[in-house]
Length: 133
Image (cartoon, rainbow, N blue to C red):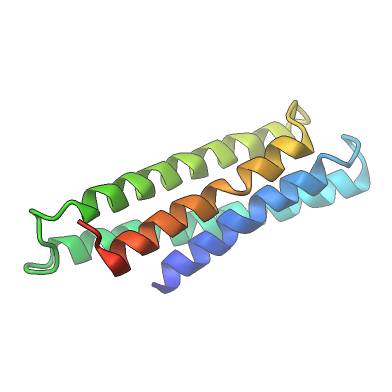
């Protein structure tokens, strides 16, 4: 749970950094500061937290009796986690674009993208707690 919370915290914060980074002219001191912040957040917090979440999740799923394999909720949860991992990959690519001063997306794009982890997390939590089917 701790790894998942750390992963989600980073997934909520990184797109916000991108929103603010869009307002900075490439090559400025402020832009370079955002590059360092984005790099550290991704490499030192988000990536390790995602890896730990996947490792502990796989161990939990492989524990006999934890999952009712005939239930449908875990398929939806797994799909949401896979989508979250894909979004994580997209944010990594966007960071590379900023690092190379090649960002072509608007702050509005990143504001909208910032909502993706929220929706996916809501799906995961509902599936785990409510187990609707």
